[in-house]
Image (cartoon, rainbow, N blue to C red):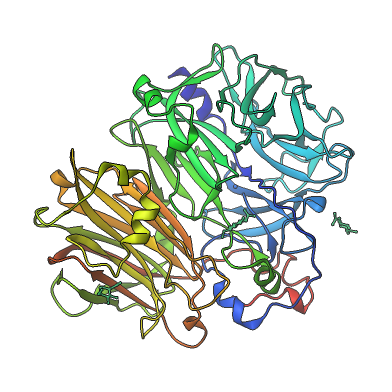
Length: 582
Ligand SMILES: *[C@@H]1O[C@H](CO)[C@@H](O)[C@H](O)[C@H]1NC(C)=O
Ligand SMILES: *[C@@H]1O[C@H](CO)[C@@H](O)[C@H](O)[C@H]1NC(C)=O
Ligand SMILES: *[C@@H]1O[C@H](CO)[C@@H](O)[C@H](O)[C@H]1NC(C)=O
C-alpha cells in the first residue's frame, strides 16, 4: 500500500534492447512497393531501426534504441532516439538524447529507463557497452532541467555507477528498470544478469542514486536456466479505480522465444523480494514459461510507465518486422511501437487487462456499419463492414453473442497447453460448432489475402473455454514473410456472459487485437500485396454451425497521426533516399 503511493510519484519512459547482431549495410533507396507497410498511427521513427517509451512535466517522452546509420540492428553505434508528444498519438522527433561518446558506452548506449527523482529532476539510467565490451550501468541528467523538451543530456563523471560484479557475465548485465523508493527512503532498481551461470533479476539500492549496493537475494532467478531475461519491469497494480489490495507485476522478456511473460505477486521492500501466491507457485511459479503472456502474438520488450496526469499505467512494446532483413534495408526502417495500452488488474486479481489509451478516439473519422441488414451472421456467413474507405487504418470493436453453448466441440485437457497448435489445426476455414467467428481484416476483394482474428468455444472437463486465434497463413501472397498462427485462451466465463468481445486496431502492416475486453492481446504483422493496387475490405465472418449475433459494432476509420513528420531534421534534412512516403 505504502509502496504504491511512492511508486506513483515515479514517472518513466524506457528503452528496449534486444541483441541481434547483423552487419551494417549501405543505405539503399526504399523500393516503392514497401511504403504500403508503413503505419499511419503507430509510432515509428522516420527511418532506421528502433524500439522502446516517459512522461515529464506535461509531455510524454519516448526514448528508443536507434541506429543512426541503418535500418538494421547495430550495437556499434546504438543511440537513444527521442520523440515527444502531448497526447501519445502525435509525435515530434528531437535530436538523439544519448550517443556512444564515452569510454563507459563507447560500443553503444543500450536499454534503460528514466526515473523522476524526489525533487522532480529526471534521470536516465542505461546500460553502456564499454570500450572493453562489458555491460555497465550509467546515468545521465538533463543539461537544462527547465527545458520542457529535455533535449540535451549530460552523462555524469561518476559513470559507470554500477560495474559488472565478479559473478556476472560481462555480456549479460543490462536493462535497468525505472527506480522506485522503499519505505526506508532508499532508491532501488532491478537489472537483468546472468549470475554464476543462472539468469537472474538483481536489485540494487542507493540513497543518492550514485553509489549503489547490490541486494544479496535476487528479485527473481530462473531455476538453473542460463537464458537471461531482458527488459525486466516491476510495477504496482490495482483493480481499476481501487486503491486497496495493491499487488505487483513482474514482467520479463525472454530472448529465446521473443515473448513477454508476467506474474502477479507481492513485492516486499524489506528484503526486496517478489513472491507469488502458493497456488500459482504450484502452477510453476519460478518457471516463466508457465506465466501469463503480455501478448500472445508478435510483441517483445514491453515496458510500462505511470502517467500521473491521467492516473494510469501505460504499456508500450516493440513490434519487430516479420519480413526479411533485405526488405528492411529496402524500406529504410524496421520495427515499430505497439499502440500504447492502459493496464490494470482484473477482478480476480490474477491477470492484467490491457486496452488502447482513449486518445486513439481523437483519430476517429467515418463510422463503419454492418452491410446487408440485421445483426445476425448465419453459419458460413461473411458480412462486410462498410462505410469506411480505408480499411487499412481502422479501430473495430465487435461483441459476438452466442444463444447457446450446446454445439461446442469437445477438447481434451492436454490440448490446452498449446493454443498456437490448436489455432494452426483449426483455422478460420475449418468449420466448427461454436466458432470460428470473428473478423477478416486486410482482405483483398477476391479474399486471396486476408488475416482472420477469431474465437472458438470448446467444451472441456470443467466447463467451457474460449480460444482466440490470429491466423496469418493467408495474410499475404508475398513469400519470405513470417506467417504464423497465434493462439491463446480468453479468461472469461462464457457460460455466464454468453458473449465475447473483440477489438482490433488495424494499421497497414500491424493488426493488434484485444479479446474479452482486453483480457488477452494478440499482435501480428502483415504484409499484404493487394494494397499496392486495390482497396482492402473488412468483414465479420462466422464458420460455426449456428448463427452468431453481433450485439455491438463500433467500427471507425482512423485518421493519420502526425508521427515524426515535418521539421524534425530526419526527413527534411536527409537525402532523397531518406524520404519515406507515408
Ligand atoms: C559507427 O559509425 C561510424 C560513423 O559515424 C562508422 O565509421 C563506424 O564504422 C560505425 N561503427 C560500427 C560498429 O558500425
Ligand atoms: C523479429 O521477428 C522474427 C520473426 O518474424 C524473428 O525471427 C527475429 O529474430 C526477430 N528479430 C529480432 C531482432 O528480434
Ligand atoms: C469458412 O469455411 C469455408 C469452408 O471451409 C471456407 O471456404 C471459407 O474460406 C471459410 N471462411 C474463412 C473466413 O476462412
